[in-house]
Structure formats: C-alpha cells, structure tokens
Image (cartoon, rainbow, N blue to C red; front, side, top):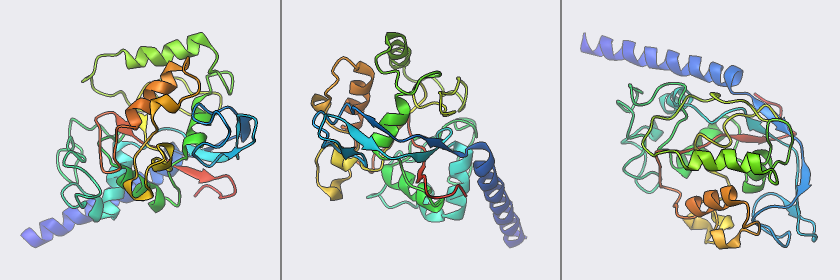
Length: 268
C-alpha cells in the first residue's frame, strides 16, 4: 500500500510538472526586445561586461533578443525541480546553493503558504537559475541585455533620464523589508510588454562574474558600484552595489530571475 501511495504521489507530481511546463509557454512567453546602441551604466568607454559590443563612443551595441515576460514563478520552478530532482532542496550540492536555498518552501516538492504559485521564485542561486534556463532551451540574460530592457518605461524604451521613472524605482527600495512579495504582473507592463523588471525582485544575470572583473570560476554577480558611470542614476547604482556582494551559490529573499533567448531562436 505504501509503495502504491508513493507511486501515485510521483505520478501526481509528474502531472503537475507537465501542467506547469505548459503554463510556462502560455503564461510566461519570450517577448522581443529590440537591439540598440545605448550608454551602459557599467561601460563608460564602451568596453564593459556583457554581450554588448563596444562602439568606441562610450556606448555598447546590444543585439535584439527575447526575454521572458515576467520573473520565473514558484509554480514554474516547482515543475523544474520535479523534472530535475537534483535541484530539489536538500539535493543540490552545497557548492551550487547555500543552506537557505528554497528554504521557504513547505517541502522539497511542495510550495506551501509561504511560497504562493504566482509569486516570483526566490532563494535560488545563480547555478540553479542557469540550470532552469538551460532546461528551457534558454539562458540567463546578460547584464547589457537586462539593462537595456530595464531602461524602458510604459511608454518609451529609454526612460533613464526621466525623474518620475527613477522615483518609482527608488520608492520600491524604500519599502520595508520582510513583507510578502506580490504576484508577478501585479503592476503595468513596460513598452515591450515585460513585467516586473523593477519593483518586485532583484534578478540574476548570465555574465555575473565579468561585471566585477573577477575570476570565471568565482561567478560573482553584479559589479562594483564605483564602476557605474551614471552616478546620478541611483536606481542602477543600488542594484549593482547589491549584486556585487553575492556569490553564485548565494540565495536571497528578494533575489529571482527570468530567462532569455537569442532572437534567432524561435520560442519553444
């Protein structure tokens, strides 16, 4: 009887994983972000980190790419660990995830009240985030890609010089810590149709280590805030300063991610 019960539970978990994987395609599609030449906060000379190519004029060229509409949710990440049990809590190697990895889940294969399905997946390491994206035939976005997409407001593609846009982001930083995270897509989308690039969670990027100029094996996220060329853009400076304190195995209560694909790759 116990063996039959365990088998039924496994089948139920597999069904949940399949349903969530299908929902990922429908509810969290990859949307196009147009390529552009733009001045990166971390590339004052056009030679900074990321997939962008320096132009020699203080700007970088970022090719068009695809980015998920919202951060990966708990339900989506639960489907991933159901298909890849090596990434369950308690199974992931300590070198790849710290002791707080998915610590708010009720169980390694159950979300529970502290991790609602539509809430962004947090307490996920860089390694786990990248493994998730690879399993989707995708990757984490590079810093320059993320920065380009995150510069958009609801109406324009580059709102970084808009004081009102900056203030909205700073208002998020000023919120008291410890409050439950809202569900994804609780606010309005930007001009690309993307949600929650600001105001919900911090997000991992693919080329995290190179933003600090650290050794490849260390996989640090972010870059030193002193390297930010646009010191007046305090919102970006805050993000870079926070991310630069992390190692790739680290997790955080407000640290999530979303995946990206090259524009030439058709969405799956």
